[in-house]
Amino acid sequence: MLTPSLIKTPLPHHASSVLKSHPAITPMAFVQPIIRAYEQRQMSPLAALEKAQIPPSLVNNASECITALQMEALSDAAMRELDDEGLGWFERRLPWGSYGMLARASISAPNLGLALARWCRHHGLITGDIQLQLSEQAGTATLTLHESRALGAMREFCLVSVLRNIHGFASWLINEPISLLHASFPFATPAHANVYKVLFAPGSIGFDAPVASLQFEARWLQAPLARDETALNHMLQRALPIQVRPYQREKTLVQRVRQLLAASGEEQQTAETLSRQLHLSQRSLHRQLKEEGISLQALKDDIRRERAIALLLRTSRPIKRVAQACGFMNDKSFIRAFRLWTGMSPSEFRKTAGQRAA
Image 1 (tube, one colour):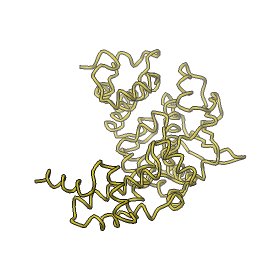
Image 2 (image 1 turned 90 degrees about the vertical axis):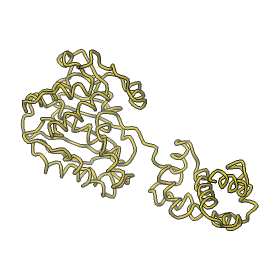
Image 3 (image 1 turned 90 degrees about the horizontal axis):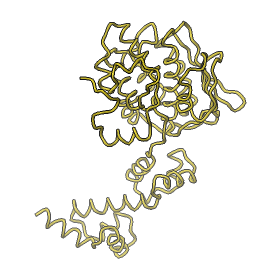
């Protein structure tokens, strides 16, 4: 049974928070092309609509809107069922994983400019129906989408989706929301034009343009990538959020700093060595850590505390040797610090842990 309302069944906590921050503003004009894609394949969209909790009776109601979470669920279900990440936009299907291949071809680039250039070039290998081009002039970078054939009823949804996808992926690559200066579209102003102000914020929006395009400050092209293959594999498990919702910087810097500190020893790392490895200025390193609610010294203390606890629990080393292994000048300063961390001396902690294990 399809639910009689847009949101009926209880959603998980993280989903509820998304709904609060992203209200129902996605127009049915973006849902209707997905339904057409099913019709073209002579398949039923009912299962996908049910997963997204969208009553079929509302699909043709232009005044109705859905949430970004629902659009994500619908798109994900449709792409899998149709085995087409293009959702019927192009003459040939884009099998599941096509855009993942573009992402993998871009992830090894040294900076965003080269990553986007690769994306544009390789996109032409998976479909010839559109061409993407990256250019730079007078401090402004422009991503242009050229149409090679008439896209018909799929046109608006295709152009919006492709540009949202590349903008979201670019922001994800450098873990910074890239502020757009302008977005243009080669069709008349739609009735739901207000949603464009959200999808392509904060820049201006233009319709009846010669081509579809995005513009942003060219300085972003020099930004080093903040992601690696591991992060990409994780993102591809649920990639649609970067397309259907405005990108927000993830709090990943703490994790990256922790990994570097743990790998080489916190006493060997300074703000200077870390910022060099992370391709950040020392000022940016301290600022971003502060935004994530922690300081570099606090992270170093965390690593040192974890190492001390591990040595006390897993070895029988004397306290003095544990102190030395954790970078303390003497056991007295170690004992004082350990009391601040745990409320106990190292000896008391080891004894208590042993009693619990017994």
